[in-house]
Length: 475
Image 1 (cartoon, rainbow, N blue to C red):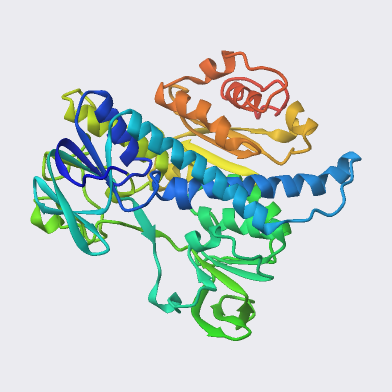
Image 2: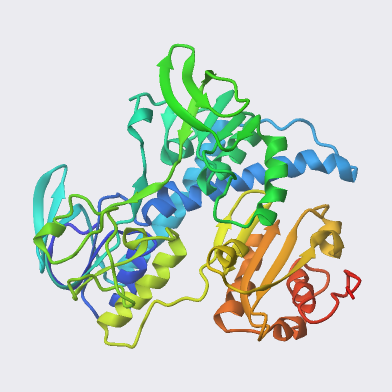
């Protein structure tokens, strides 16, 4: 971090996460004097420090534990794994330190002035810097980019001031492996961390108030994941809610409301992951012309400008989807606009990925979207049970599906469930973005045997028979 706090600059960026630091770097690469303001000692934001990256390090270990157990089916037996929690925690922390340290080095190489402080607007061209509530300087700027991200929602009924009740940050600290572990919320974060703790030995119970886990994804994509999670977890309760938590010496007592669900139940630890809220409070935005909606999001236009034309907002703080890669793309758009380039954020597809095992990934129009918005689609599916590579790695439960415009056969959506779905979805995103046709994907030669072939064969099904699946034609 630079010793001199504040000063004058062309662009000030508030927030050093996957939106903020790419914005700072892009502006600096184009000759702008940039000051990057972030409260965290290390750049990278929640994603690198307390979210995407540490969770994926732990999920990697979780997958290894699963495969060691499954190897018995292939004629290879291992003794029961011994988990050294201290070493595992050190591994996770080392991954984070290496990545965030590299971001810091890139900032220095680009001559981006980084300031460890909280930034709040005094007016439309000045930011006050504070540390521990004390003013330590000011920044005068020509343009500003707000990239402050989001924070976990903590409903009042779950705030017990007891470290046994955790948010995702607390869960990633991996203080211990609780025998009885309750997860409130069956979304992406809850499922990923639940699978980590289950692999380490916890009896995991998931409570989701909606009709299915991973709401937003098509049911046929979630089905193989749910089947595996039902094997890994103690219980998954949907259409169920936790009405209260109470701290006792024997554990956290949860009052649970749902058909056939025993209540109360006692757990050693509880993870609360029921959503996130934008970090737009206490930023002094009332001292500017920047508008904030009733949920705390900052409305922006296609260039990511706020209602104050020289102040931009990118990432979680401007609305859903709250995804790191969305923020990174918005960073490029915002800086391009500052540079006077004809930029606009108008993606045809933003990929969503659940990094469990199996992974679930989708982009573009889903069947759920099509139904809710009365969009006509043609859907083709290729089951991985017909994939040579999936058979070879003993993972035939996967599925690849494509959604096409029925009149033109243009690809408008892709969904995949199975190992590596998060990597495979990139081809789907490219197909949707470039308005590829079914014949384009089917005629693209894919290496054999690979899981990526499932995209090719799913495309073949749009206008002909897939090579490895036969469906009799109806009269």
